[in-house]
Image (cartoon, rainbow, N blue to C red; front, side):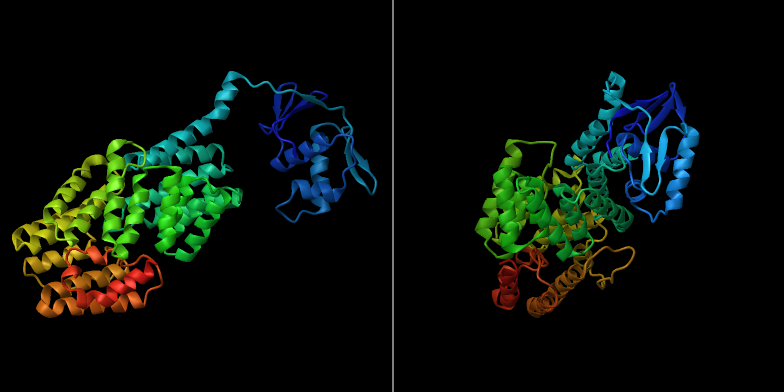
Length: 478
């Protein structure tokens, strides 16, 4: 059907954009189906339209009958005039009133009203790109307002899905995950794909959310479709890089950097693969490039965290404690930035500082650092078991429940840390055996990528015991 046009016939005006029928300037009340039927008749004035054509045009979503059409025609005749719509026996209906199409001239107020949802969408997207907690909450409200105005806009559904997914991520450092926000994110991401199946951003968002629900294969399929639809959009390559692993993650990180040079998170993604492959020189170069880019052009958009944390872990694995401590302190300095992942990164950094103190024999400082980690992230299982061992308290790795958001691998890793800390010379072999069994039962993917630099396992000091696990990680990251 035509849309955004104005037609007049007799004393009536039909505004198809505003979905409004008036008579001599006064609003005329008709149902939405009657409006759609009238619009179709008016835009095809003078033509004989079959019953089937009218039903298909006006009732595409329901199984309507001839009787439904006849009742709607009868109601329109009562509202307009019986002389406006002619019945053609055994052929259909024809709108016979003289119709004039008017050129629309929008007022300044009307133009502002039309632009308002788009301005709000831009505001919401800018808020999300800061990756700041308060701005993410604000963005969700903005996109909810946009959808109330334009419920059929795919980009607004993408924006709301993104805000809800980020709100879910905001709870990753907390005792309970906001699964309701994640479910809402999935609902709106799917709706965006339904509304516009050729919109790459919708598929990229769907992949981003599916990855968080644990549906890895579906997440990859959606992310790859986004890249296929819009191959020059760096956001799609970044999300595919996040979802994928091994060589595909490296390729997508490089593609992101070719489209947006110096983007810190792309360097971080590439570094994770190099860590899993134990290519520490390559990992160090990627992280230092990301840090340099971040410091050279600090921006409120997509600000980076975790670069100094991972660079510190690489330094610690190479027996460079002073370098490691310097990077850890720089990571902690970003805690008050309000960044979405700052609290989680700082929890991981305090855990690493505890491991450094443990290695140096300062168990009191280690216990304090592990406590700082748990204060920021109560569900940090490795920090929990490490602190318990440090203070001489009995500990058992908890099963997953309402108060603990952890994966099976995270529980296995925490068990390995506990075993390594409490079994003396046999600890390394027993810890390695636990993680080898866990990884052998897991599908291909990024699980375990951090083992080569896990600060409490200290795998570089027991190369024989950890050889099988490290080889498996290299193969998984191929």
